[in-house]
Length: 116
Ligand SMILES: [Zn+2]
Image (tube, rainbow, N blue to C red):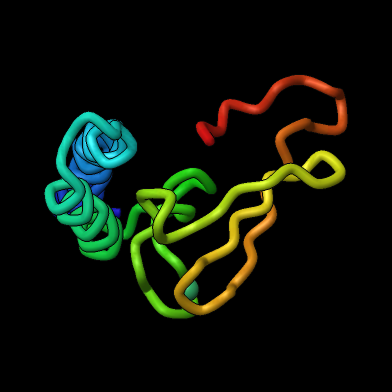
């Protein structure tokens, strides 16, 4: 790899790290219920756009913000319901009825860090 290619590669990695920092801040904003819903929806949109532009793979707790089926935002209790079932958090989209299951205990019975 020549020096120019190396520089491009490093620049890309640095950009991804900066994008990840932004994503964590936006996620905190989107999940905080003190802020108005419109701004939280915008921040969820930004999370998707930034992850696509900088090719950052999203963790499970980021993916829960939007429904994959109907692409609506699952931010308030009017748009989704949560229940517990056999070690899983079960999210149900009220718009289309899509169901998402996320385990809240690992195999070693350690608590996972997913925010409900
Ligand atoms: Zn849906």
